[in-house]
Image (cartoon, rainbow, N blue to C red; front, top):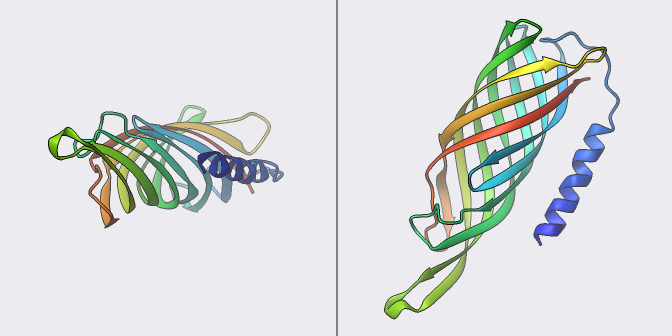
Length: 190
């Protein structure tokens, strides 16, 4: 199942990259791109669309997959791992700095995840199950983007800090907590 998700998502990302970029001045227009966001318990590949409201602010939209292996981070179960799909909406402010720009923003993710878990039950008997969750994940983001010479492309690195909140749970409880992440992003002007 994970391999099927990864394969389909890789095809989606490759399709997005194959779209030809036109020259668009930084801080205006619309950008399409991809990102890989890593956090201690997983990885989130996404396809991104960023549209500028003015030269100092933009809206960010993401669609992607979330693959998680919470190892020993869960205070609820011994193991928790799973995957699912979701998306984000965010607001960014842009601050020019030398040849690039600093970005600061507020992003809100919504993920539909299927989590397989194991734990120890009464008399130390192993127990396991599957829980479907809808996760709301608001976080603050900050980072730096550099333009790529002779193109409308840019590459950036951002850090995020926020909270995972299980807003709908179908099954036994699974972990939710604060989260930190790092993301590598590639964007090109449309």
